[in-house]
Picture 1 (tube, rainbow, N blue to C red):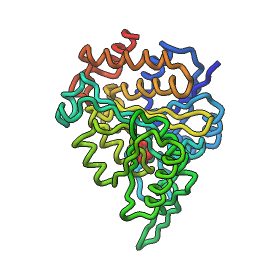
Picture 2: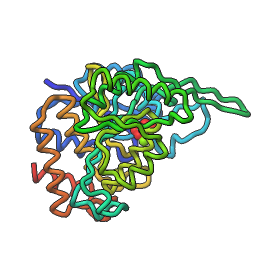
Picture 3: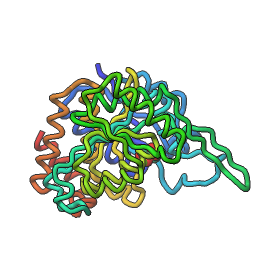
Amino acid sequence: MTLIATLPGDGIGPEVLAAGLEVLAAVAEVDVEEHVFGGASIDAHGVALTDEVLAACRGADAVLLGAVGGPKWDTTDPRKPRPEQGLLGVRKGLGLFANLRPVRAIEALYDASPLREERIAGTDLLVVRELTGGIYFGAKTRTAQAASDLCEYSVVEIERIARVAFTAARTHVTSVDKANVLETSRLWREVVTRVHAEEFPGVELQHLLVDNAAMALVSAPNRFDVIVTENMFGDILSDEAAMITGSIGMLPSASLGEGGPGLFEPVHGSAPDIAGKAIANPLAMFLSVALMLRRGLGLEAEAGAVESAVDRALADGLRTHDLGGSATTAQATAAVLALL
Ligand code: IPM
Ligand code: MG
């Protein structure tokens, strides 16, 4: 039997994860094993990710994650544990170097986006974010007077994420870097250019500086197909791109490695401000379940069923609080389940 490891985490994480499991159960028969993670794990064990939980994730067919973090564990003290270390630990520990964040403007939600309809209409892009390298994982130093974070990339790391991007492209890949300033970006640009020429000459390749890309994402998002970029640029640009759909509560993600279980999670965080109020938008979680069905379990028909149920629920007028409506998590879940 297929085994899903679930990591509810903190804040609205457990709320949207529970809703996601209802949707999952409606389309697939799987075993689910829950593990304490993030701030909850810091409270229980003093660390955000225990070796046992990491091992359990490794042994599962896929990992489904809620969210981590919250004011309770916020600290600037480098000696104190942080919930985010759990997330970074699973990504690194499972070798999940490729983070896929699809951003699709949904017609029923055009009015929920802060961007004008004529700008967002037709947007259907994929952010391919490198997830286990760069400044997130470089050596860190801290003294009373200074601090540093090392940004490092190897040729191999760039090659493999470039291949994921070219393989996912329908028409073209936009590689985003800061090659006018950063050495890592100059290597990035060289390697992406070579992988393109040698292995994917049929796909169009364009390079964009990250500041320019940030501008293009709001001025003409529908011109993008696949965006490939390094870890931190991808973090920032994917939040920006989320607003095309109207809310970060709409964005799913898949993190994949070379074989082994993938990790599926909504892009939104733990949203401590609405945690416990039962009003979190579960749609990003449902769409993450769909990505898990497709990319993690090879269940394409089931994935499509979940996605089209979400689409139809929105077309029928479903709006959670983040989208300017009043539907609760339970009502949104019921609306989608009714269409499955
Ligand atoms: C994300 C989040 C994480 C990241 C945080 C919570 C560590 O912002 O998944 O985008 O920066 O990768
Ligand atoms: Mg982020």
